[in-house]
Every structure is written in C-alpha cells, then in structure tokens.
Image 1 (cartoon, rainbow, N blue to C red):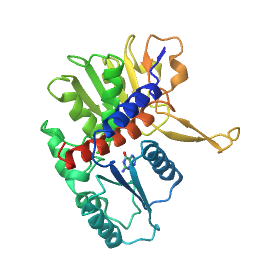
Image 2 (image 1 turned 180 degrees about the vertical axis):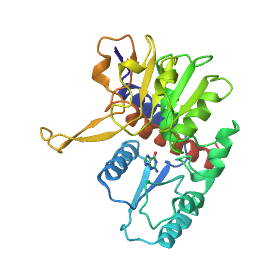
Image 3 (image 1 turned 90 degrees about the vertical axis):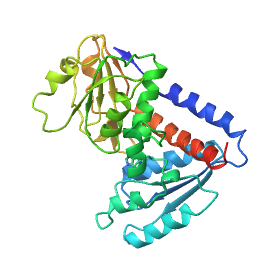
Length: 287
Ligand code: GUN
C-alpha cells in the first residue's frame, strides 16, 4: 500500500500563496462565522484561523451564540458583504436547526463566497465557467495532480452526493480536460462493489467509518478518503481518535494508493480555503 500524504502538498500551496501575497496592495481578508458550537466545527474553524494568521491574512472570527436569530446572522453577512477589507466570507456548517442554511448561503455575495456553496458558484462550476470551487473537492483535484494520477478516460466512483463534496467533486471530474467517467453512489446504491471494483479512483465521502475495505478495491487503484470521524478512544488525551471512511489497515498488503486520515484531504481543505481567499483578494484588487 502506498500512502498519499497531503501535508507536503498543502505546505507547497501555502508557500505559493505567501509568495503571491507580495504582489497584492493589501493582504487578503477572511471572515469566519461560527454559530453551532459543536466540537468538530470549533476545531475546523480554529485550523482555518491558524492558517490565515500564518499567512498574515486579515482574519476575523465571529463566534455567535447558538441562540442567535437568522436575522442577526443575515445582518452580519450584509455588513461583511459591504466591507472592502473582507475578500472571503465563510459560515461554518452545519447551522443550528432554527436557521435556514439555504437563505444564509444565498446571502453571501457570490464574489466573496470562498466556500463556493452559493447557487451562482455551484451553477458556474456545473457549466465549466470560472467560479469559486468548494475547498474539499478542489483539494482532492490538487492531490491527484500533485501525485501525477491520470484522470482522463479513468473510471472514478464518488461515494456521497452532498453539496459540499460529492456533487462538486463529480462536476470537477467531468470537466473537459479532466475527462473522467464518473459514477456517484449514495446510501441507496444497490451494490457498491459493482461500481468500486471497476474503478481506477475511488473518492469516499460517505461520513461512515469502514465504508470501504480492501475487498472493494482492485489492484493499482487510488483511494481518496474524505471522511473525518471521531471514534471514542480512552488511550488518547482528547478521548477520541480520528478515522476516515476507509478501513486503512485492511490494505496493508495491497497494491493500492490511499490518502491517510489525519494528514490527508483535511489539510488540503484548509489550504484551498486560503487559496480561494487569495484569488478573491487578487480579483477584487483588479490584479
Ligand atoms: N462544514 C463541513 N465542511 C465545511 C466546509 O468546507 N465549509 C463550511 N463552511 N462548513 C463546513
């Protein structure tokens, strides 16, 4: 088994962004809004903050109480949409149940939507126009390119059809120039193996540990593990450990390349957010 570590890939992206910032008139500005205070969201937001600060971005973190109204959140977004120092606005998902996620995402100005979740950016991606591409699928494309993994004419199975990962992932793989033959599976798929066993690349974003073990994968294939799951583990200081959606151990003696968790796709997601924010800043400065 070959481990496709992503830390070095992310570090290279961060170094390029740092270089690119020297050509800007002002540093990129990123606003991150957190409303749901679950442990995973707090961790993700902290990692985004650390990376933005490391790059010298203008970083603003808005931590709202979980009881905040939708109107309060929308009004903060309106203010940030008009703030010239802010190039990227990110509302960490999921939101508390009383807030309409769709209305919130639609309120973010399309030219500051560095998550690429708004209907305008999702639509542009689908028709192959320039857009903000959602960070996780963009990171996966970057990993494939970094490791020289060919996509043209290859069978690729995407497991999961979320708006954040599965759908934009499939759209990217279908693009002219990428040219993969894409299958998108979901929890109702009758026989997952029927699809995965003929796949050259499998992208697993199911949100469930052990979704894929070695029996699902043919020799020579590439597996990209997008899953991030917390498993209780009393031997760890935090009381849990992170595992992906792939049963990594089962591949030990197989000729398969796999991204690890942690140290895989997750680090790329954060780097891609920084890249999208940098692109937005450059664009908004007319450069
Ligand atoms: N929740 C899980 N992943 C993401 C992401 O990429 N962006 C935002 N805003 N929320 C998330």
